Image (tube, rainbow over all chains, first blue to last red; front, side, top):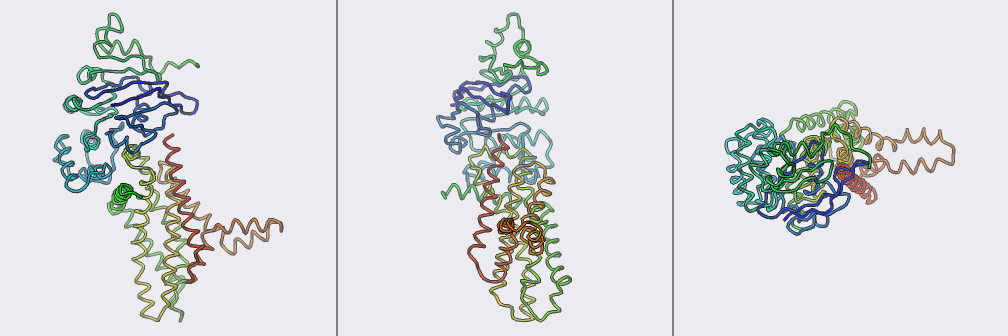
Length: 246
Length: 252
């Protein structure tokens, strides 16, 4: 459902994403791993059509993101990093606005809002201003926005960032449940999360994919590694090490 | 324009328009606008001391100066706020074209300004009670005034697309609005024309042709001149195209 081919993104002279290709099928939950600045967010922003790739192609459900962005975006739900929200709206009006932009109007809109309020445990703050929400609620509100139209493709940039352990567990469970009939990509720094929720994981370092496989197969990449954590540390380099000029 | 275009533009418009009423900025600006518009008319132009009830020279004449400061205050949040909150990333990954969002936001700001302008109607009623003003110049005065305001708002929209700071957007927009108003100011033009070598005079006059002021005063005279209306409309369109360019460049 997600087809990414030879994606390259150059900012000025810096190559942020360097020839990345992968695909995600329906029913797959893909974990996106990598050190800070490795190009995870940049890749996701290209897949969601926010950034235009320098070269390469992105297809969602067979629709090309560059040729027909509006059509492709209809298939997509996206939770950006840091869960941005319009601070002057209430939770329900924010979700209503997002529903309208997704082409959901009238009674269907009310139904869609109620559904995601329920799914994301937001019912008790539905008329509260987004300004006054705690971080967990803000995150869940933005998450609710991404699933309001029940999309086929879901892209989540650090969906558990800033949540407490209970909420993390809840979000992971939600991702896993939804993964059965959607194609999901989510990025994270927490490796145990990958084992808990993902059917597959990609490790990206300095803009390149350095590993791609099930969590179990990734562990076998590095002989003697007991956990994904060790694998991660041995195949990626800290961002303080300068990249050698090509 | 397809159905989808209209629905998306309307959704953005509605959010943005209602957003103004949720923030104190709108109320502050409307009050200051009304104080300034009426204050200048009654206490600086002393409209009541004259037998003449026409509004052009004593009411509408102040509007460009007021808009120079207040239109950027209304428009500065349009895109700067989206950049600052990061919601631009949400908006641009929705099935909404940049153009639909730009139009929706611009018309929301313009709608706010329409309310402010409607609230100045008591002065027209006052003049109607005191005398019998020609309706032509009053209508064209309002049209000119509103076009001027929309042009300033569109300029501000373009500036706000380039920056995440509302303060920076405000200051730069005021500067632009001031410049484009001032270049056509007769006394200034006169000084510049006298100062430059004679061959340059036509260049100065050509630049002055792009001033808001000339076109504004032509319109307030009470004659609907198509070229002046087209002038403001094209300023608005160019500014909105620049907004689109700014948004694109920010997204790299």
